[in-house]
Image 1 (cartoon, one colour):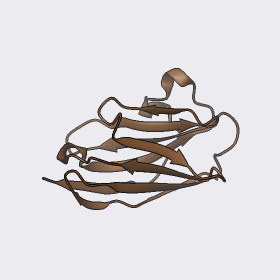
Image 2: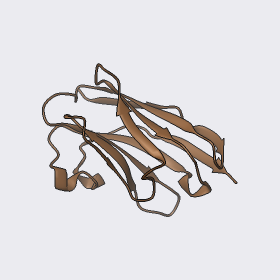
Image 3: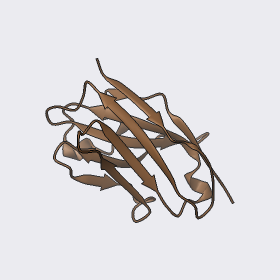
Length: 125
């Protein structure tokens, strides 16, 4: 059974930093990928970052250079380090996973089978 549990959200000031964690179980085998998405009120779910089973990482254009996705040595926890936060980063952040997502679909939320409950990130100006 797949479980994804996010933690680390909260309130930050613009220019500040925050780290989100996603504890993953039941999915870290095979050609899996774990991604972070975010959704602000009235907007579509947006790709933030993803890491594949081989360690390769991918980023959305709006966060490139500011956010870093990584994982622990056991490959069971994925982190999203967010630096230089902006008010437009305010959203609910979701961790998502799929056991066999293909590279061309890694930015498509519809291709992920498993989702966490989400964690709110609010950035004040």
